[in-house]
Image 1 (tube, helix red, strand yellow):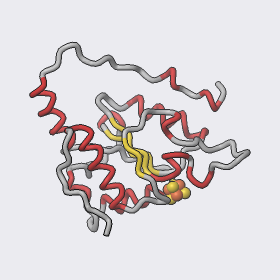
Image 2 (cartoon, rainbow, N blue to C red):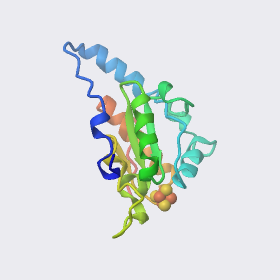
Image 3 (cartoon, helix red, strand yellow):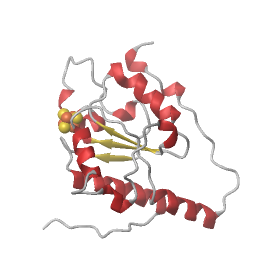
Image 4 (cartoon, helix red, strand yellow):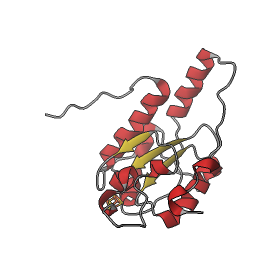
Length: 173
Ligand code: SF4
């Protein structure tokens, strides 16, 4: 298989349910938003910031999303933190496919968002954005993004799930 044409045909489209129960869906989405389980998964330097976000100073557990799972089968959130190379892309896609639905992806850092500093004419090894492989729900730019930025990304994901923001927005002064 050519590297550049990797995968999209491997993704499984799960059809939306035929019957919706709005109140139940809202309740389930509220539960999901308050108990996201990220996969223990890091690819490069951004993963250090992700680990710092989970540690005591920034404490992701305040938002219910600190339970990093060691298996994709127990995870509903993939935080892609680091440089994705074509060599690694098959593993990234396999891990994503092994996560049960519903699942979400957060691209953390410029490398995961768009290839970062490694995209230049003639380069052949870095995927120019993980969304070339799997669908991404939230993008957190930065090289690396600070833990506060990752927390903001988690809040954005919660907002996507519930339709409302539970934490006030901090305005720049
Ligand atoms: S975005 Fe910057 S800090 Fe993050 S993995 Fe790429 S080079 Fe490292």
